[in-house]
Image (tube, rainbow, N blue to C red; front, side):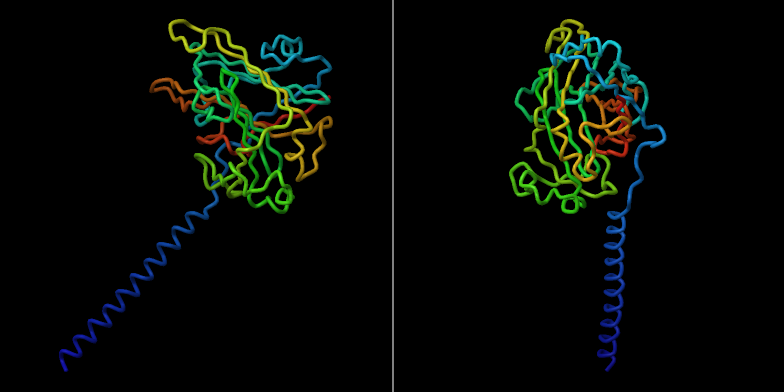
Length: 305
């Protein structure tokens, strides 16, 4: 009888222990889920996001990367890019400018670089592994990423927010069939989870009619001398932005006073040594985090005719 009582006691004690263990396990899962569901604050100071006025031009722009047309000489350039994370001044000067006409959005970059380097020559190779400049253009429910290195090799991706994929009409378009090759989920880089959730990335998408050109002032891949840098010139047809403009039916080309969100950045394989705060990424509008994929931190580009 004593043995039976002892066994029953041990059984009950084990049951209590298991219940507590199960509760702790459930609580742990709950804590993990709560942590995963936590909405992160926007990482940049939204009151400090730059505003830029892009002027309309009637001048003919020859897209060759030289940036020697009169419009590029008189246009307001951006301030010098700052560190993407820390927001401090950077080692070398980088600036951008935007103009437009009835057919194209034009973007220019002036990049100081004393040691010009590039290695990737295949289109859509991971250009961010070279020194590059980048442009992001955001619509309401999708955004476009462009990268280019000193060789002029480009990389493009189109991203759609998962939560908007059906309601904004993208799911009905064969162009955005998510079962195609080079289409996959994307959750961000250093800022995740984003408050809007995951994105669908289309690494098979090319901007229709895009033109790009690069010129460099120095010798490429020769560390024995000191180079001046390189310039980049882009022309993006307004007609190619139809899918960015789709959700809110934005005017293309824009009308006087319209604003788009765009991000302008530069990434470097060589960083300034400590104690300098050099993340290797520099931008017109710092993000406060190692991630360019945060449209809430993009520069406001206002269009003036």
